[in-house]
Amino acid sequence: MPGHVGGSPTAALAEPSSTFWLDTAPSVYRARVETSRGEFVMEVRRAWAPLGADRFYNLIRAGYYDDSRFTRIVPGYIAQFGIARDSAINATWVARSFPDDSAHHSNVRGTFAFAMTGPNARTTQIYINLVDNTRNDSQGFSPMGRIIEGMSVVDSLYGGYGENSGSGMRAGKQGPLLNGGNAYIDREFPKLDRLVWIRVER
Image: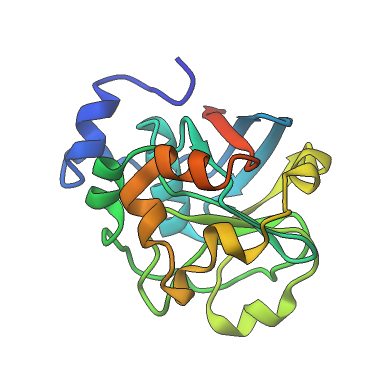
């Protein structure tokens, strides 16, 4: 099943202290993303941001991102996802932060990284750079890979809501999305594109 590798993904999502989350990601892995606009492929290089690469890898294995939404699409800036499909999962993970990685690569078009509100505050949300956003380099955002297939799909994600749908984590306006999950998002922002599933391809 896409996004699910062994064990009980549902149980793992409910138990962030489980040993499931201690798995180390491969040095290089690819994540194929199925969306309502088509597919794209994210290539993750652990050497770029090892802690981020591990967290992303395990969230994918657990099916965290399956049936979620691209909640923040700002044309000429970024495409962001990572708010889960329901409030129970969000409640478990919204404050489950992990330490920062040192930034080794620039935020150029097609690279992606964990979003954050400040130092050591990364959790589950990922942004993809739609353009060169090198101004983000000095703020501690550490890219962990790049889109190697389907960047045109990422470019086509619906961005008509701009900051009104997902806002930024730093803006502190994501509460209704976290508490309401897909039910709220689909009601208030029905045009947002869906992230159907992500699966790891080695």
